[in-house]
Image 1 (spheres, rainbow, N blue to C red):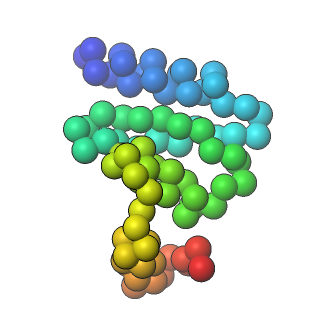
Image 2 (cartoon, rainbow, N blue to C red):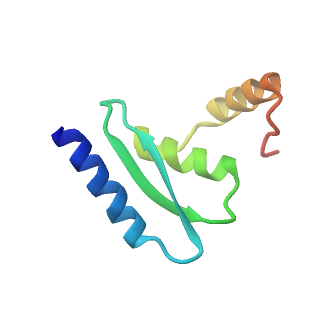
Length: 82
């Protein structure tokens, strides 16, 4: 129950911090903790995924990881950022 309360508080905090032209996005850390962040409303999926990855792992995606993601999305029929 405390986890749900903390999650709700973190989300509400992100909503309050978001500017009019931003949206709230979220990801889950490797420890299972939700993390909310804001992105420009016109950010594409690739930009959001890249930021979520950085928050989750503390580093940007490597070129190999980006290539693997592009391959996986192509196989699933999802347009890539390229």
